Length: 263
Image (cartoon, rainbow, N blue to C red):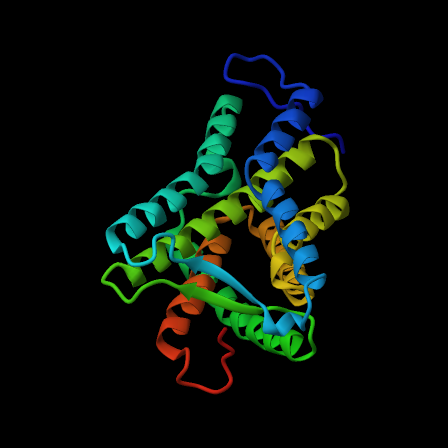
C-alpha cells in the first residue's frame, strides 16, 4: 500500500525530496551526528593500548570542576540545547498539520504511558545491566560511568533531567519521527525497523560492542511496541526510568558493591 502524500498547513504537498532532506537534516543535528561521534570514539578506544574494560565512558560528567554554579549552568545548557532537535521535529510535524500527537507524544493517555513504561523499564533494565556486565567481562565493552558530578545539591535533579532529555530525544526522533518519515517515503516495515534499531545501536558504540548490540536489540523491541500502540509515550517513560535508575543507582551504589564496575 502506498503511503498517502503528507501535506503542509497551506495544503501544498511535501515532496519526497523535501521529506528526505528534512529527515537527514534532523538526524545530522541530533542522533546521526552522535552516531558518527560514537564511531570515532570507538575507533579511538580500540586503537588505544590496553583492554576496553580498562577504559571509561562517562555519560554525565562535570563541565567546570571546582565551580559548582558554573557547572550547573553548563549542565542545564547541555540539556536545553539537546532538546532543540525535538523542537524542530515538533515544528515540522505542526507544519504538516498533525503535530506531536501523530507520534503519540502528548498527554492523552498518561496512565497508559506510565504503566506500560514502568513494565518495559523493569523488563529491559535488568536484562540490559546483565548484558553490560557480561560484555565488559568478555572484553567487548568499556567501563560505563553513568555520572561523575560533584556531590552538590543539584546532582540528582540534573541527573534526572539528563535521563528525561535522553528519553525524549531518542524516542521522539529515532522512533516516532524517523518511522513516520520512512513510512511516508515508502520504506518497508522491516527496513524501517532495521534502520531505527541500527541507528540506536550506533550512537551507543562509544560504550563498546556490548553497548551497540544491547541498544540495537532495545531498538527492535521499541519499534515493535511503537507499531503496536502508535505512541512513543510509553517508550519515553520507560527510557527515562531506565536512565534515572542507572544514574541515581550509580550515585548510591558506586564503591559500595563489588559487582558494579567503577573507573
